[in-house]
Length: 305
Image (spheres, rainbow, N blue to C red):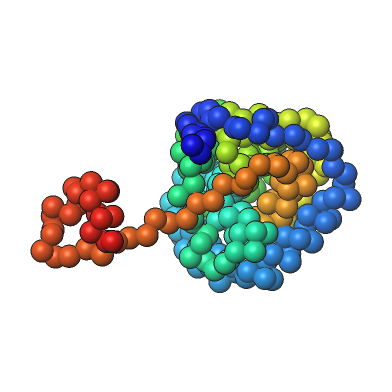
């Protein structure tokens, strides 16, 4: 009788038959290889058109809102930083494409969201919600810091707001304290997410294991990981300067590179790598509606046969 192994998944924990992921030490030189592979993935799977389609509507809404409602101006910088904080979750489709290319599978965009069929999907969403909660706390603190220094008055204009930041003690306090707090949040997000999303895609692990592995990766490689965080920050800033156009190149390259950083830092598992794909949809007949919606799966399968 063939022995079957059943793995029970949970948002927080999951049984992993091959033990805790092993974290390796890497050097700064390895980051060059990681970025090179990320660029290679980007040219093999160009995604700039998609990111252009996503970037400009979001940027337009933010900038338009700032133009007509100055109360949002003090939060533009925290919001921009917050988007970077949840970036690892937003580009998870790029990790999936790099994973599929590594396995020699089809890498068309229709597979970018195949991760929703992964057994680890609840854990992936749980981690995404955790990052969103961190962003919400960050923006709340940034708003409170501004109010503590300038009160509840709205900026007269963007130019006046910038002048207040650069030329008043309150503005200096907002910039120094705000950036210090933002740095703490950035380190926390980096530690929690640098390899956790790729690990959840690649291995049968739960959220707690993914988070612990990511933190261990940062603690074991503090200099390369902090340098990686700095590279991401500088790349995003440079990409945003030319009217956000550079982000269409920068974001996909960083996304693909993060997958290869994971492969460099976490030792591959000797066990079978999980496969997941959309379940085939059977034919539906009008005469069976709405009963077909509630039919058992076995009955539907038998009708297909």
